[in-house]
Length: 168
Image (cartoon, rainbow, N blue to C red):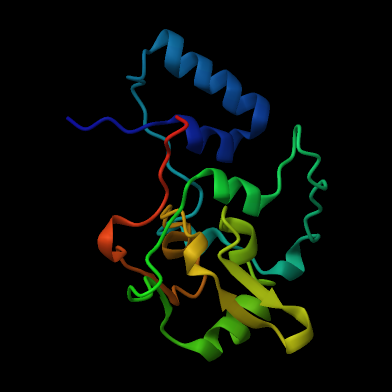
């Protein structure tokens, strides 16, 4: 028998407090074996739930202070990420024009928000041209999972490059 987690779908369906109450019930009373299974409100892959930017306010993020909020590139440096410069690129776009027409024009460049390592950067002054900084990649595959156009292909890099989590 396969067990499915009910925790995350409960937050999607019931909100913060309802999700917390359900999580406590499922964890402490049913010990993860609730007699029901919740599903996420959206069907299919994760990228299907991404909504157009016009339906939301642009996010605002606090400036890095070095104590509570850190600069992304400093954090990438702490991960020890290293890729050989002569290896084939492991992040590719199937259709370059699609990045502008769908991801930038409709979704306001979500790659810059879902990628934790600032791999994807849109140049606002150059009509939304996308630059891929593959050397920063942490290999989380968020781009492969969350890209609304499914235009980014992530392949395993050669040579075992990537993050070296030696501080863990």
